[in-house]
Image 1 (cartoon, rainbow, N blue to C red):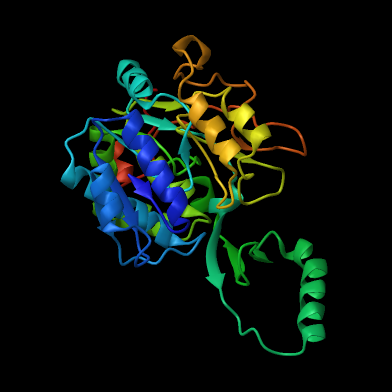
Image 2 (cartoon, one colour):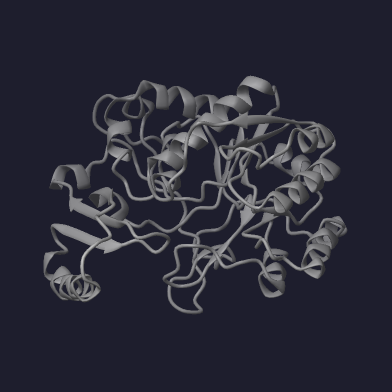
Length: 352
């Protein structure tokens, strides 16, 4: 499942590479932009289109809705034993057929690139605000300056800051104590780009359809696409989850977007088990494309195997803890029983 929103040439390059490296795969291309993916390209690579009506806005619930829609479509058009969710700005960096065999041999249900917990994501209820972009420039700047100086004293109850990708503001109001101490399920933060077994997809979709307090809770979590599906997976004690990236991405300290893939990032990605690297820029050079393709031809002995990251080990993916300091594998939070994920009762610890 390739979720696309920009760069038609990059999408075509990625789809052709996927088809070459995984001849038997069912490919579904999700997009919402007319003309972004042509029927001719879909025919060439043997892909199915998911033309979505959901207009994704980064950071809000629309990205989660789009991912759920994509997973449901994948299960509807394919009987594959695994679903791989990637972006149209990703590109393969290893032999996908060999990688698929490793995924099957591992026997896991979910490969997630797990992030360290960020409790502000869910200790507050979040809204995206789009205030009028009018008024004297000096007045707006003065308001921002004043808020920055007042905000620290209000942090225990309120957070407000401007987004980094658009002019909107992000407002967080602290949840009451019980809602912070006992969320309806354990919160797991991880990348949206993941690999799931068919039964894991079915579990997520069933739990989502159940709605209830879990759904209401995550609708007001910050960046819910990095925690809702992941937490539903964790809530099912029958599923085996490993901390292993599907797509390499590295976030410099205090950045909300991963570093663009360049020669340095690609060399780093090659040291991980990831099957893809992201984000590939629209103005990528032919030399970098050739380097990515060369990585797909590496001998098996040169490719890091699919495996669960050990707690405490430095990771080559994810967000820096401090400038130049890589993230560390933290493991999974304690699981909760399936009843809580289906909308009822207090969290129940389950054996891991």
